[in-house]
Length: 266
Image 1 (cartoon, rainbow, N blue to C red):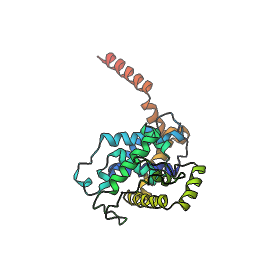
Image 2: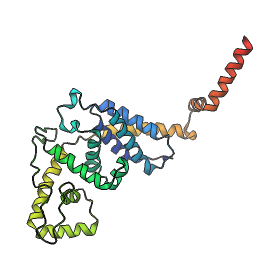
Image 3: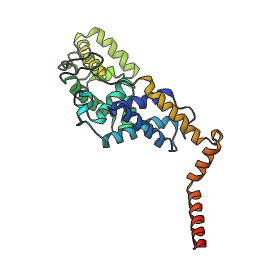
């Protein structure tokens, strides 16, 4: 079961995801709170809680996809599919691994990488991408994938899953990363490719909305209430009565008593 102390960063993560899946802030808080309450009823560990809640949030956003409503049309980020917005927040804001995102999306890690590149290129190439951070124009994507190997030590070239993206997402193991860092110091072509990819990468990052601290403080208060309902030692007598009346066997017993009372009267 969910332990008493859900991490503050997990609440922040869920708030960030809800903020990206619903443009309306009140609706976002409501949907995130409802998800927290529903998932808290499951017999899962705290470790699994965040991923399960994220999956439920995304599934609900997919059902309620409102991209075609007028408020969404001015922001290229909110014209993306819910899963695409989820993916960008998971990778850029939360810095989740491909492995973790793949578990939530129920797909292969390679699919996470190719989807991420596709949506990044699409979003970066959108004209008029003005936002609060000051990003106001699209960036060139040509050459951002890397270059065809010119030396034996150059990374393998994949146009749909470039090594430059994987490097910026910190998906390389430490030994591979050290190798690439040493290679970049000696190879101008690969270093320039990484710089071009970085321009695209951080341009996209600026277009992702962030949630303020108060956005997840409300969720923290709600989790306190949920924990209180689940721990009888913290109940008032009113809490105990409500819990007793919510039990199915209690409701069945009351129904039997009412039927017996009605038969006795008539």
